View 1 (tube, rainbow, N blue to C red):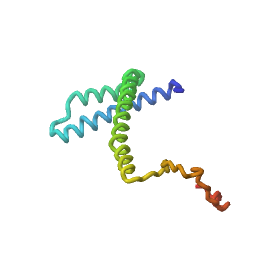
View 2 (tube, rainbow, N blue to C red; view 1 turned 60 degrees about the vertical axis):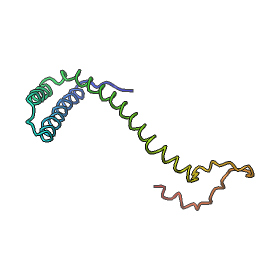
View 3 (cartoon, one colour; view 1 turned 30 degrees about the vertical axis):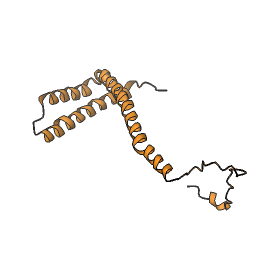
View 4 (tube, rainbow, N blue to C red; view 1 turned 45 degrees about the horizontal axis):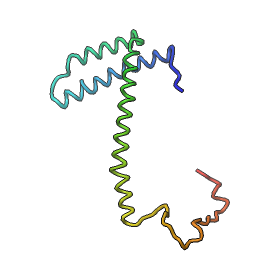
Length: 136
């Protein structure tokens, strides 16, 4: 259950959001962009960053709608990215690895059926009592 933040903690989070967003925009569009493209930083960046910092300092509640929109965007992008990454891992790593193991006859779960076997139970190993002395 998500408990909504109120009071000082909410204002602090909104203030942090304004500063972090201004810093992130500065790094991406003010440092990396000009460095990679050999162009000066755009004027809009400094205007937006100045506005974000002023709002974060003087009126952090005004950043509330922007923060909620940003979080929704993050949830949507996170859902999309996780599906892409998990699909790539499944079809790019696990499926070829499983196919290769089956082709080589490797059966780590011992799933082969043996009609002559009376039981598939594996007997337990006898352990000394000291193996529980230091579990970690």
